[in-house]
Image 1 (spheres, rainbow, N blue to C red):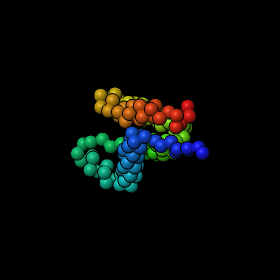
Image 2 (cartoon, rainbow, N blue to C red; image 1 turned 45 degrees about the vertical axis):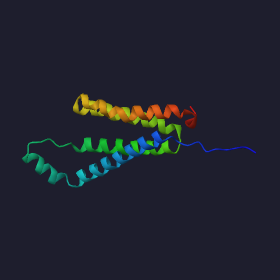
Image 3 (spheres, rainbow, N blue to C red; image 1 turned 90 degrees about the vertical axis):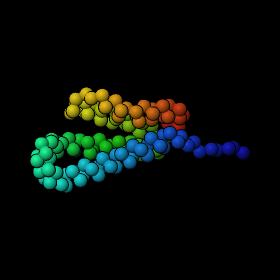
Image 4 (tube, helix red, strand yellow; image 1 turned 120 degrees about the horizontal axis):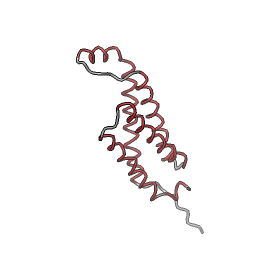
Length: 130
């Protein structure tokens, strides 16, 4: 009789995925809230002399966060295309941040979760067949 064990994702991959999914959901909800009440927020920002993101910036952020959520779900489903897509979306997101606001040393903090994800995926590379 053969012993067939289901190969499981590690706790690290699941934890990082959960953290990033929660962050993506909050980002999407915040972007939608910003779209819906842009005029009120714009009035408040003008009185306090602060800049507000343009509709293009909000749309790009919204698209990138939705793509990030989709790629994380694909990783949780053990699809190798999810890994390639995840790191592509993360790279595009970081490059977009650098292009739109300039390089700031705090952007380096956005590399922590993807680097941890890469380490955990490397440890479980047999699951993803690459």
